[in-house]
Image (cartoon, rainbow, N blue to C red):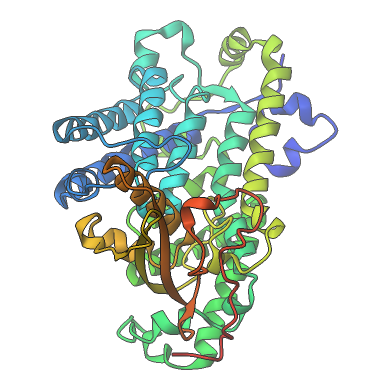
Length: 467
């Protein structure tokens, strides 16, 4: 019989029997709490979309959406977009209570990922995290216990789960912390930018806000944020440092929720980070509060062994390794591309570069008729919404996307045109600089994935040259 890994500790997994321990049983309690927290937070997020009329703002009102290639999805008709978000809210409830869990997780992943891919201007790291979490939950049987499914299908009920499920969730929650720290190791952050720009307007923050105009405080906040993100996951992995690390990271998230408008992210991370505690801690807490405590027994271990399927272990290991490798590669891929990633934007997305830049810009599009050389200045507000313009400015990949759209629009009118831009941007308070070569027809160049786009002008303005 398998030995139950009661601690779920890092050293307990990575010993000489790590392959065996990857499929050994652990208490499912913390996974259940994670399932409930994810479903509850997602329901809250859905209600925010209805409360603030974001469905209409983002997908009904715009005449054009900056969808992600190669998918190039388009929004559904208005009534169907609203129905989709009602469905996402219902699926979030189903996930939380563990009802039709497999179907619910698949549909939620597909539905939420579809909305995510509709508009590049809405990219947020925590939306990307939701996509990843909803994906891995498809494969984690978090409905085995304390769920409607466990009541309906008692032969699938078990208070134990394979250890890899716990460690996959821990890995994914640790990724934003660790790579968020790696992203902070850049010259601007180490000199206090963009925090210096943001905190100067937040001096009413309780207790420490009075010091936000002092450079020593800016540097303290910058370096402490870097070190916290870098060290919190290692500290959470070991029992001695786990509680202090969790207390500090909780305070960090509360400060972020107060200082920045970042929606559900800090609240979800505070709940999700509890996944690093011993996997049985919710059960032990329940036992202290309940008159009918529950304990794991030999029958539970026997049921777990019946549900195991060793034939899939090799395949599961390969899939886990591939997923982990991809999540490590994506945040580091910008190192393969020359230039400042916060300026060129190449390799910026999916890399956990959270609150690391203050960027503004101005972009003017020109369409040149290839038949007669006529040059036309484009009124952007005739095509896209002000919030889309604001997000597009300073982002070469979005400017390139819109240039392709203009090309197709004029093609429908029977005109063969080239698209040029006069685009300037400012990074972290620098003086404005041209970001795209104005002599390049953007409809004749590509948007490379892992190589440098030579039509993007490198950052030449020094940080000291503040506007």
